[in-house]
Length: 327
Image (cartoon, rainbow, N blue to C red; front, side, top):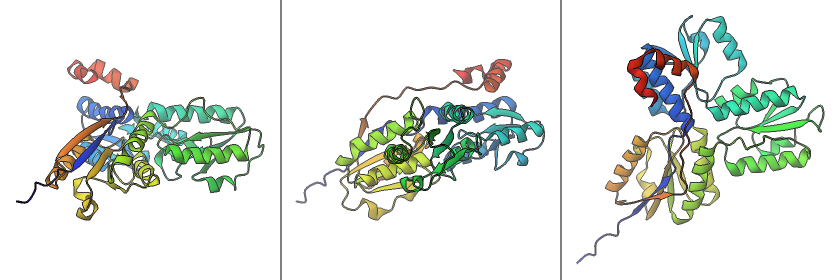
């Protein structure tokens, strides 16, 4: 008699998925559509997840690359990644009704950039040049700001006064990646100033810590998230550094059967802009592939919430029928 097949295990990481900034941004678009009606224009992807963007587009959101693409006097929402001052000025010139969905933790970095620039510092921005968040932060003080993406680029930095240098980081970097670059900056500029509290956001850090805690037990890590999601890509990199095979998947259809060969224990997480419904679909798919034992592994609790911007709060108060949405 053939012995029964040993069930395979999914380690479902927690925290995973939506962070407070993403929940806030999505709620802003949803409430704006329900309060003001379609269309509502959104500059760039509200968050970097194709499923979320497509879902909101189906509800009446129109995503544009530039505020120049928004009709004059229309309503526009800025994405969670923030915008440069020139975007705000362009919106004013077009008389747009602006709702700002910038994550408060990104706003914190913008405020720090303005402060350091006013103090006469040269500013080094640690992050990925083509990411929307870096583009927005760079716009706060473009004449004194340089972007570095790896430790080698630090060697080529030149500044007017090496004694007046400050650094800030993109909120969605790998902790290890940022640490290496910051150490290189401190070697080159021993008196460099940094933020009072690190710029990498709590959700990015928590999801990376969860991966570090669980990957030693796993044969494979799957990260649910879109290709342009910085924090999702960083989760893959964290596992890879620990020599655990890892793949970024848009949804369960992205999983290749050969990845699962010889895998007994699989860790599963999701980037901060990936909805839980996509995770659930992956769990269902894996169950059909023999991964019938699901064990949720909570590394730390996460209870952060951000308030809605005043434009949305005022709209809710003016429309009693939508007041429940603020709860």
